[in-house]
Length: 423
Image (cartoon, rainbow, N blue to C red; front, side, top):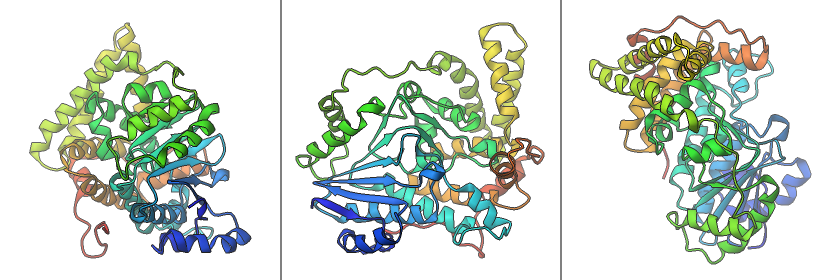
């Protein structure tokens, strides 16, 4: 099993398996280096996101390849562990190719094939679901930037290793979107409760390794300079690991970190943990208000929960305490976000806490994504302002009513099929 398992050839995504991809290595290498590299080392499959010019951001081809690799690894009795990382030191993965989605959505001539919102999000969310249900433990090495699509390709796996260079965020509301790729599954279920998830989802707060460990998003820490030793230790230990033992994955990574000589390394101090009482007070109250308001029907959780949050922050900001300063800063942050995205996100996370599995969460998010991806919507305007023209001055639509928010969550109808999953 030593050597290259796959070169990221398209046949892997079509389900032909690892052996077929090996045979394609010479052809793939002679044409161009693929955007996802897949290498076998004993019982470990090392998956490398390989789009460094775009900070390893995911496009349609990469999502297809990842889905095929995950599918094949689960079916391969010789594969006991997946290790996922990004090419270079700057980023694990900076997100999904939302510029490509917008370009296709408004018909720009430079738009890439297959980047229409329905095609891209359908494939990306199927891949996210496979990460969350794969019986082969996945250990993701979160070095550098981890945002959006990169979160979805890793956070649902068994273990996530943060480093001293990790910069993690779910910044979607700043571009008129919502924290997708399964955000409705994990954000409201963090160990400290849904308040932290709502805070992260609405504000897009950037998190260091210290924050990620404090809030239970990352499972482990390793200094960036020792990641090669950690990867080698994981590979060495995987041969003796039980097949598909997800429950033992955390201890398995602990042992590998110790073997790599990083067992005593201390992560950066969390800057968010000291304000956790404020997060719980304001965002916890907003979440509870949204839960209560949901009894009035779809859309009310988002509108009433967000209204409660803004009113409470405004009242607190009038003072002169540390809490008042934090409230004012948080209000300023929220003031830059799309009002529609804030209300939709609040509704999304309240709903997500009640959904029984990642399948239902992603099916809900697929509806939201397609409703967001319209030429007159805030998503395309946010991408234009922040990522394309970079004037940082989006013109948002007015704050929505409950009926407007509810429309985002409604069934898609006959013209577009709902998101479904293969075995």
